[in-house]
Image 1: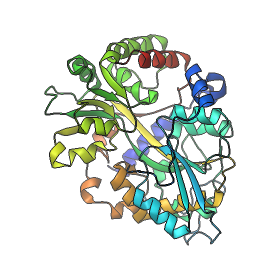
Image 2 (image 1 turned 30 degrees about the vertical axis):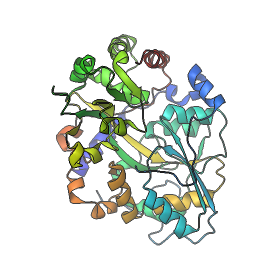
Image 3 (image 1 turned 90 degrees about the horizontal axis):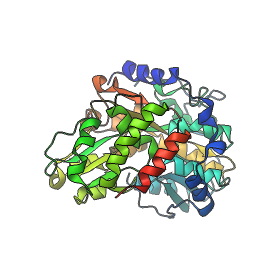
Length: 404
């Protein structure tokens, strides 16, 4: 994939500014999210988590401070680090290496299944609970607006110089003050081809074959990703809030819901591995590993030909982190080129770190499911924060209530 093509796509994303709707999470919190915020994260905590899963740029990504090309200044790092993250999203060996290098004794890893769940937890008053969080890019403005995250001290993160230029200065953080790009990828279709004999390379085909595989379909528990399928199948923008278009998308989702086995953002790959599910609306994480194993070589991941979502996850530091030095130390550590390369090879999502690519298996760099080819890249669409649109919230709740 050419750097100029990635740059053009990211700039297209930046041309359509997010509306104020995306910043008003407090007024748009759904009833279910409010309950979630009050009752707890539905997350897992562990001091030892079972996690699995370009152009040369000048030093520094922040607008207010430049990173030095030398190592970060020596500081006393706290003995604990509390992370709130998607499940299986940091290489476990990297966690252990970080602990040993910085003398961190307890690394607590709490998880969420969707950005909406993460936001609901912060809405519930979780300030001061975590040191790091990994929101998808379009959620960053709302987190800034409501004081959920703080500016990063870039003088402590010299490895930020490796972030590729196309990932800087975009609408979710124009001055690059609040987030450090983590990984990017796509939302697509996973298929056990030894069971599913039909071609399922478009969202339209996904909906057409779904009834035949009723009860064996797994879908990530993330409304922003799920709405992609019906909207793109109908030829609409995945960011649509048009009532007529959402009404048609609702019809497709209601027709799909009875055939869905589960909404699962953490173990969808396991369900596909065991053939409990043979069709999925998923990410690449965990799926490409199955594809590359002899016993599950029939697993295929397709980037839908009728278009899909390009997403970018980021690292951010919550407001009032209990261990701020450990948080900054981790962000610099995780962007060490060899460490970041290990993240890419474990999680199987594309890195934003130019230097890390020198340490990634060439076969992975040439895998079109991870580092997307130019012709496919042109069909991808970036997300805006439409998560609080009332009609979307209503359709999502109705969809969930009709599953199975």
